[in-house]
Length: 472
Ligand SMILES: Cc1cc2nc3c(=O)[nH]c(=O)nc-3n(C[C@H](O)[C@H](O)[C@H](O)COP(=O)(O)OP(=O)(O)OC[C@H]3O[C@@H](n4cnc5c(N)ncnc54)[C@H](O)[C@@H]3O)c2cc1C
Image (cartoon, rainbow, N blue to C red):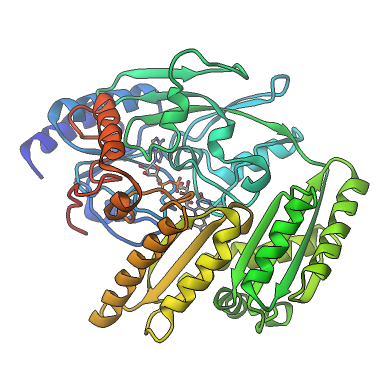
């Protein structure tokens, strides 16, 4: 720790309570990792509870030339919340108030540390619906969801987080507080700074207040699953559902490796078809029971016609639907429970190319020591890939990284993008130049410099070639 940081901590202690400034290694250990399981130790963790405190903390760090990294629920899968350059770790977890639910205008105003599942719970009694609800809902925060422009299973019908954020209060690296957007449904006054900050991975500003629009909660939902013996048959089913005029609220898929891993994890093998090549989960929602039932029965007709279906199930009630959803939601925890090291990719391609990418990834993995599982949001063409390997085994580590590079290259060849919802962060930044031209990267760097001329806010993220510090 340098002198500037020591002086900074003394100044923080002058206006924050003891428990808001953490400097002991044991206390800081809680904040030094996220779902990537990489670890970086900061010099100090600060836990503000107001925008004014955030502003003072950031202004002082900026003046002292000390890097600062914002952090929410630490469920990120691209390492965005890790303090790779040490310095200040700014946890927003104490700013967790739901400030206002405006039923008349169907809007909600929240602080960034509100946990996604808590907001969903609060809205239930108002019969309102905030569609963005990632599978990490019980831990991830609204601030983290906004910073990553999080996707979720129902994005295929309802769109991503950005589609619901209409206003933000945010603090710039120098401590200036800005309010962008607001409470109106429309706003084309100047550049859309709300859209720019959403998805900026905590590199442009720290979000301190979020204004989101809401929808009425759909009254009916039906969930079904199909097991198929072929990936391309599954893609044909997905395409035929849309072509048949149905916009489902979710279409998810899991490959055979993921199915088996979840079956072991949940000890629910009886409910899972272990020999299937792929499982497709379809959910339809709406406000009229007959319309929803008709759509579901058409989905079953289409599945029968498409061929390849070896088994199907329709949930008879909410409890059964929850059991089906659990299979999909527990995929990542199940894969992680195997105790191996893993690399994650979150690639996205035009919808119909997804099975070809998944198949090609499988082929690349054949004969290798590492294990590959694919699953994800079939309706969005968003494929999650988990490569399991042992870090201590040099050959497996090299193989895993080689495969990751190959997956990214194949994705770009299929007109896809490096990440659909998890962000670039640390894990995909070295591959940015596969997707983006130097002109595009240069333009993004100039936007970053306009917000953060000293490059102190969340350094080492997104841009290729930026140093990434050392792990804790
Ligand atoms: C089991 C599991 C399931 C998941 N499912 C999904 C899914 O369905 N969809 C999906 O998109 N992702 C998913 N993720 C990834 C992750 O949950 C999301 O990226 C989520 O948005 C991260 O939120 P967080 O609060 O944990 O943020 P963190 O991990 O703490 O931080 C993520 C990024 O946000 C920045 N940040 C956090 N708060 C602020 C703030 N107030 N202002 C500015 N920047 C901020 C950080 O600097 C960092 O760059 C999943 C992860 C896990 C472990």
